[in-house]
Image: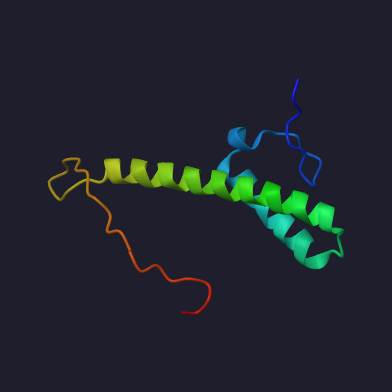
Length: 97
């Protein structure tokens, strides 16, 4: 039987079953430990891999929430309408470009 991924905090909850807030908190914890600790390369790679899975899970949950919000928008008459959100083709990046 495969083991669930074990997080730095010792939790063995599956990433896909994790609530958004818990996944985000665990991701922040991984980032902090990677920035603060003098860790061996193998440990850094394992934490990076786990962080990548958590980040993808959070992104999926945010996308689902966005779709639900779009479905629930109401117009001025109180009728429910589905409005497409504008897609930003030129999203700002972290490089300062």
